[in-house]
Length: 363
Ligand SMILES: Cc1cc2nc3c(=O)[nH]c(=O)nc-3n(C[C@H](O)[C@H](O)[C@H](O)COP(=O)(O)OP(=O)(O)OC[C@H]3O[C@@H](n4cnc5c(N)ncnc54)[C@H](O)[C@@H]3O)c2cc1C
Image: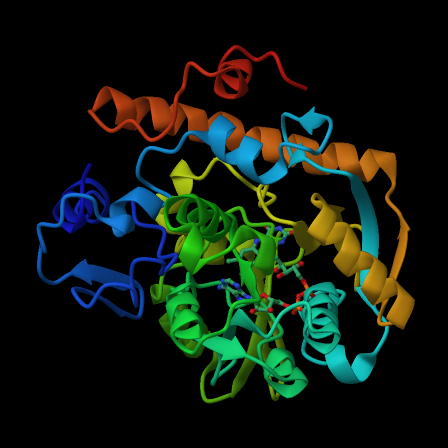
């Protein structure tokens, strides 16, 4: 087994780190500052949990998926195992003010806290509408303040350890696909620290996250105006300020995409209990993928309490989502093959899920 020394050499020094934050906060020798994580002392522990749970060390996708969603029948090779896909949006504008799209995530987390399903949630808030800040939210106002996407990668999972130290067992986690994978690997490695039966995982869709250089760019574009948020609807970058919205091409944002994201196979958080993204064809709505029994239970509670509404998902739009995922998976397998040829094996490229994309057998 390997530990912090190998995590530094094999992940961080090579620029593969996703900034999930899982290793930060658990280990006193791993520190983060904005979009950098450093192993400040190679501790020499041979069986480091940091290494074992890192989403960028070798990952047996089939095994993790079987552990988490093994009972869910039917697997879509492009968006993972799921029970149902809907359009969804929050109905309580008090709760969802500041939400990115339909406020589905904020409504679901509030439902889970109000119901006692979770005691708190690991979220990504911000003090300036731009810079991500990991928080442990236990109340609706904290959940509401965290609403809205911070497109820069945030080390939010460090708060997971804070919650555990505070004695919290029933926890909600909202994260990018890499963070969802980190949590799932962690649950397998140290089940006593993050019980799968007591943790609710809501995964976001994500094509890429941005480096902190994006913040400087946005501030420059905003001039003296105060930035209240950023949105990236189809092909457009919108910088929202107290003086109106500045519109730019999405290509401006893309130049800050983290290279580590080129290795992320997962667009829709395939291992979450519930996955949520934008419904780009219907403003103010989300795409909601319910995967696990825990996800079903939460959705039922949110619908019963009236804070969420759902609609049938148009089949043509589902196909569009699947094709977007296929496009990313194609680019990513090429990148995974490249790093493997240079000595880093992150997944088993011979397994059917990867082979199907390599051979062009999925559609
Ligand atoms: C980096 C990034 C890239 C994304 N890319 C896509 C995409 O390509 N396609 C797509 O359909 N959707 C994408 N999303 C998801 C989308 O922006 C919305 O988060 C999603 O549609 C949920 O909307 P909502 O109104 O329900 O969320 P809200 O109710 O506004 O809640 C948003 C939640 O996201 C969490 N959050 C915010 N920033 C971060 C962050 N940096 N890391 C982890 N959690 C965060 C907050 O804790 C909050 O709970 C992306 C999100 C992020 C953060």
